[in-house]
Length: 259
Length: 256
Image (cartoon, rainbow over all chains, first blue to last red; front, top):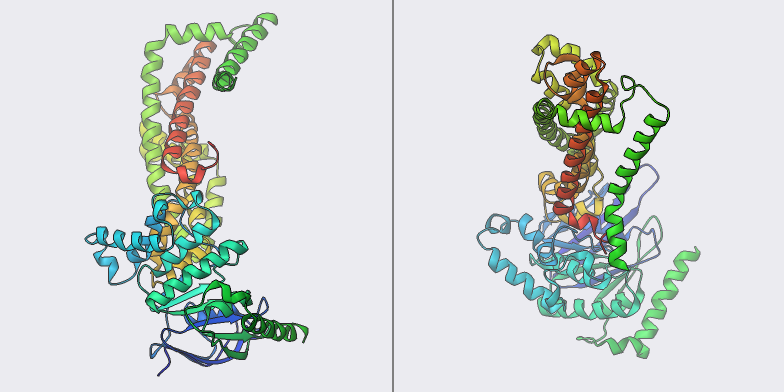
């Protein structure tokens, strides 16, 4: 199986103060769910920007789907810690936004609007927002905004979903609820996911592979495959194998922070 | 109880007007100020009624010149604001120039405009335009330039062009700034028109006040002042209403 996303000894320095991330060398397969964890300031978000082509590396090269990344990708969707919904658009219109931008949909938008709205409604329904389509984002709770934000990241059926601490600002219960939402979406569509997070339980529960990064300059210090059987139920996060796994990851992060 | 408080709140500005008028009238009577220096409220009101015809004609002149100047200001302000705000380079390059231009007293332009266009409506329109386009440019440019990078990234990862970002996010986001600036700009436009009329016109409220003043008919001068401020207030409220209608999403929470 050839790699879908391939990082070949990639480093990036924003300025002369040294590398933000250093010598990242890894492969992500199509349909794989990867998570990046590490102490704050370890360049996780920088990794996202490199991967989507928002930034160019200072050394090494990145290939996505066999093509070198030189400009922002057009096959990716992205969601951030802040939902970043546009307050002047309804939830439905927010979710439709990518279709107004991404080719080939942007040229068909007017003609196929009804059809696209159908897609958006279906997607919103699967994340439990069926009754909130016509509400404005500021009328929604934080968790609902984040759900809508994930819908927006997925509406154009991207092959690569980038999630930058998407659940970081939510309370614990909402967060676990959204893990399950994301798990179900992924099980159904099997797009490739790159998830950046602080939350080790989140990483272990959702991902196939967890990469642990060191503090600045960010390097990958550990690659760990999570071989828990799928589909995973939320209950497994209270079982011993899962807890042991999270413990080990936690210990590794602790080591990085103390050095 | 609540309804009563609401009515009081709504009546408050009118009460303030009445109180101010009373103080005005009483002060003038108490100190026996001669009417060619400071006319009483009553004399001003009488002048308003007596000269309703000419005042009406001259206010119409002032109103339409102001509105034409204002319309020009909006068109140029929006366009220039969009251009300046759309690129960091242009923003840095043009901003100091604009500030410098704005610092010039616009009265200083009137003689120049008279040389170019003669006496009449054209200098008034252009003065109104010159004085009112600045706040619009600054607000639109600032609204565009302060776009959150995260918002931009949402579109950029989709392969959006700079123009997409500006049209889909920048422009709608700067609309509240734009409408806020309209309220400031319309009052400034009145200032511009009247200033120009006092110096270089034979029509308009500014001219009326100037000629009435030279004949010591202060009642008429004050009547002119009141008409100008009434027109400006009406236009201001109109744009405040428009602002609320167009950008309700930016004013959420205020009416909760």
